[in-house]
Image (cartoon, rainbow, N blue to C red; front, side):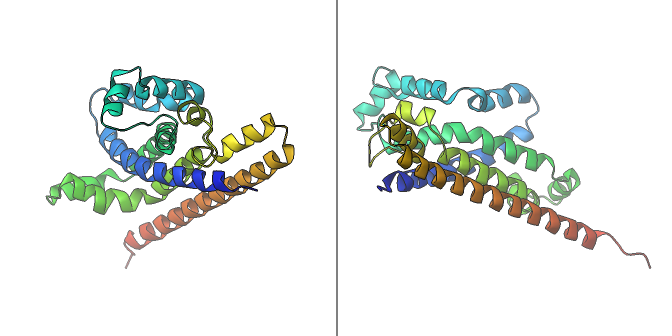
Length: 231
């Protein structure tokens, strides 16, 4: 059994998750405190969440294909994202970004605003507030969003096959391998890949529940310590 789809999937998912984590965190932080047009911006950023993955892949193909101005520019500087693992990373980033963004934004919005106001009163800069106040308080939700984002990137199929294709040993991920095996009538091989994907997905969900539950318990203990005892 060729395990290259497993390693390709992990490489793509890990790379996409790192990119999505940074972009999702910074975007969610900015949109949370946006005063005007928040709902419009939020809707635009969440569009890939409701679009079919093949539609996302088609739009990416139009954007990065050689028939577009941007695609020709990339081709002129020696960058070709079509039918490459880098293209698969872009597809995974686009489809998993809304998961990271919305989960992180929800976690940030749950942070006690009095702590943020107090930090500003003390003269802290906004990035320092993010690093020292918001992240520690919102970390369980952010970690859960990152785990779900990784799972979404790991299982991506539609957008990946549209922009990266199905090249064995290069762009063939586990999801694409299942499709290829079924197309070739090899149900046993498809079932093996399904078992691997289900195992990974279940492990991810267990880790997410563990981290979330641990974060909630830690937050409760912190709040109990902060409550003044009666004398």
